Structure formats: C-alpha cells, structure tokens
Image (cartoon, rainbow, N blue to C red; front, side, top):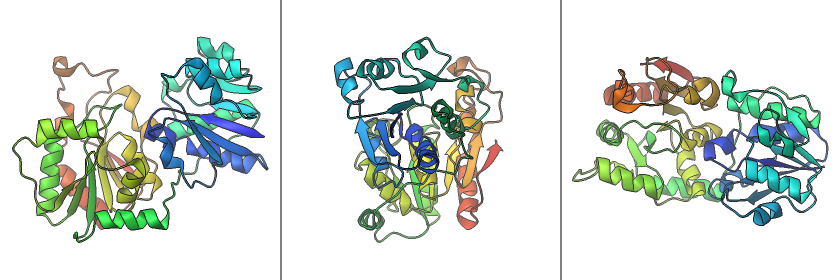
Length: 339
C-alpha cells in the first residue's frame, strides 16, 4: 500500500505530523509512506526511517500541477489539514482512498471521514494527527515524540558553526510566523546578557526575520563578541545542525522549537495567550520550559486596546535568562509556567 501524508505548511506542523508516518510503519506491514510538504520545510524529513519519499507543492500552484503530486500509484492520501484545492486535485487525480475531516464543506471531495473538531483544542496536534489514521480503518497508538535525523557530516558542520566558542551554547530564534513575538529588543538584550554571563549565543532566523530584527533591534547596537549572528545565512538542514549542537533553544511558538525538541535539545518557549496557541495543542514534545503570560486566554490579539497589552512584556529578560540557566543546569521534562 502506498500512502501519502499531506501537510504542506509550516515546519512545526510538519514535525508534528511525523507520528503518523511512524504509526503507519507499525500498523501496515510493507507500507510505502510519502509526505507532501512545503518546499521550505521538506528538507527536515531527509534520512527519516519512516518516510520513503517526499514530494513538494506550493499552495499557490495551479490545479494540474497539484494533480502531479498525487500521481504515481498512490493508494491513499491522508489530509492532516483540509486544504481545499489539494483535496480537489487528489479527487481529480483519482486517488482511491482520500481521508479528511468530516466537518468541512470540502469534505465531499474525500471518501473516508474522521469526525473530530480540532477547534476544541483538547489534545495535542500530534494526537489529532494520528486520529486521522482511523480513516484507513486503523486504531491509532499512543504518540511517541517525533525524532529528526542528522548525518555525521551535518553534525560536523553544525559543530563548525560553534567552533572556538565557550560552553554552554544557546540558539536564540527571535522570529516566527503563526504566533505573536516577544519584542526583538528583548531577544537582543537576552543575547547580550547571556553572552556577558559566559554563554555562546547564535542568532538564527530567515532573511525576512533578519531584516526585521536588524530594523527593530540592531540599529546602532553593537553585539557582544560572544554572539554569532547567523540570521538569514542557514539552510533548514544547516539550522537543524546548529540546533543539534546547542544546549538549549530560545524561541516563540515556532518551528525551531519543534526542531529542537525532535533533536533532543531542550527549549525555552515563549507562548502568547491566544486560544489557537494553547500549549495543550502546540507545546514542543521535549524538555525544558514553556512560559505563558498569566492573563486570560484570548481569541485574537487586539493590540493596545487590550487591558493586558503588552502581555508578553511580562517575560523579563532577567527572568528568561534565569529560567534558561535552570534548564541548562538540570534538564527536566517540559514544564509550563504562567508569568
């Protein structure tokens, strides 16, 4: 049986889809497993033992191009998120089994349905993902935290980025797409404080995140010599290698936190209080701490009109540095702290 798992959006989303592949391998002898991913995120899947092939697609692609992603003898496709145009493409491509949620209008384009509302936010995203296996008449297993693989050559490359630095090593990733951010100046001040305390610090981020950080936090600022600014310079695999050689990663609720957890690197994660960013659903499946403002959960951020604005300022640089130090000294299973 040839099964294609569809999750062509963010890096974190893709990491949390990996338990589906792992359970397919356990539950269907001889299964061939593919993943349809975003071109930016797809490289994280390289060398994974539960994935036989990877295809990429842009969500802006024309339908005939999307149909190509479902060619080549695919027996079943599992839509972990109901992307309407991709579901249309799979239907037109004639994939025999098309598994999706049963609660969207585009569900008519599938022929196996799983009736579960993710909007309840009662479970972790990885648990919701494996529930989709019910569409193949399978009984999901308990989720085991996903694991990503680096080659020896990649690990050596990651070590070279840290060459000559002191211990311990901290990656700070100030950016992110789907969540509100701690202010860039706070990340800058955290990096400066940690470097002054004797940590080796690497800043990471995309070119867009680099430009924003430069504009909002580095204009006229001189970074401590213990800080290496690699923002905008790393491929996804190189980012994984740098993270894999670190002792802790500091970020918001974003993909690199999930990369770190899947590489067995502890995290210090700064979450905003919106309902669609609840730790119950989106926490990294690893070790470390997760900080969340001790304010009411909100549906969306209304900015300065909110009486709790800016709730993320409750995370002080000194407190984050102290909690990071505690993680470095004694790594424990992930704990959530309301600040």
